Length: 601
Image (cartoon, rainbow, N blue to C red; front, side, top):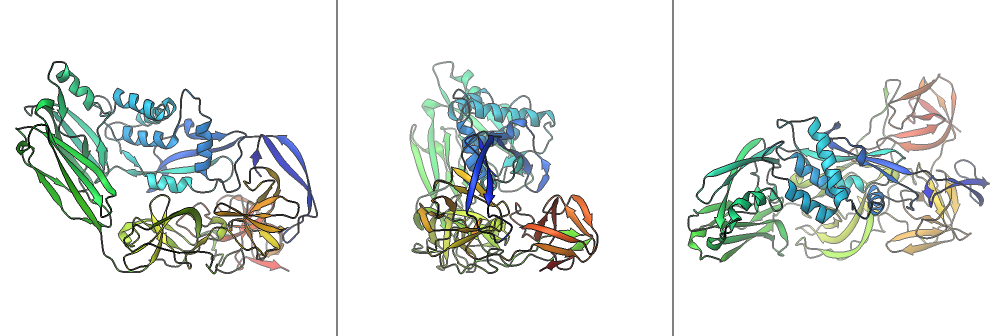
């Protein structure tokens, strides 16, 4: 059930029963709309029960908006950002990034991020963005002091969370933050090397921070009042690679008329930037410096470090240095194992895995995945019109197309199609040994092996009936954009279809009356699923309010017959856990384990 254009569409159907029924005609009535709400919750990625910070401003409401069945949280964030006042533009991602910077700063005096950063942030991202970031920081600061654990936003993890299709109203989306494990004292020095101030910041090993728009600009002002102007010896700082360390660096002010510089670029073999460019400045008093090349996963630099002596350069000149990174050689293999078993219980027992795919009982043949031209093995690949795939087996995302265990970005467990991970492919490429890979929209890579991934959409033109398999059901729309809902179809319903319609890289199926449903495999299947109408309790069976079986609602005694209205799988929102099949009944969910219940024919 969804809200569209301020109207809730309710269906009074004729000829629609339980699983296996066929839809014919429907009447509609309208009701006043209600908003869809969800909350972004910053958490420690290693302990998601720990909330990094809380704020009512992260509760996002989308009023009277059109969004399709397959809308993601990212789609809804865009809707909410569009609704922000014109005088206070808002970006939730940038606000979370800003909070990440601010909480890693020192509390109280000698802060790195002050009024300069505020002015830049408002100018660049809008007043609404800075106000949200500042609110998060103030809330965090109320509960913490300078000895507190700091946190850094996991931007890749955030994009993964936002790519999930929306859940129930009032759901929560975890925003993953990593513990900041290094700190650095920045010594601000005069031309002659006298330290006039210390600033302590926190971050992640190997992280580079751009110092533009920091309070260091303010520090230069007293020296720039006269005719002589000054610049700092660097625009960035980089944390060392070792965790749990307290590091120190010095930044010296240099007369602009005496300055000379070196620019160090870090690029791949195809000249793509792989690490932030570093600029250092000096004068005739500068000493020889050795700058260690940053670590880039899966790559080796042609120079482990570069040595520069700025005092030997002429005033006003800039020495350009390029460090090239080559992808590491590695053995083959996709490192894709089998599925994991989810948990769950009934009266103290342990469930067994649901097994198979409820959309037809087998795995996808994978013939609809076209690996095509996968590049030349260099990892550069061939760009494609973005299309969506889903995971059929347990698989991993990697930082590079040549897979290595230490380069895994995330594990995705084997799941039924309704809860399977969905990825957007933007490029086809290969590993060093020629294995086909897909590059995803977030820059990570997955195997293109059809045993593990498949196109998200059905494409068959000869289907006469599609069966609703998603626990949430599916909506019928007047248009191929799926934004004009006319009714909702329950799980288990058989829907007559007339033809397939291609919309970009997706498909829709037109019904005999001219309406449309999605062709997504997460929602429908041409194969009739095995359905259950009733089960008989073989022992005491508990009914739980939730699919993960954590909150007991009531209990059935041994021998009781229980009416089943549908099915689902546990841990649908957990990427690293496979699900266990549950039966949907009045009041909640029960186990589908044959040890506890027997299907009544």
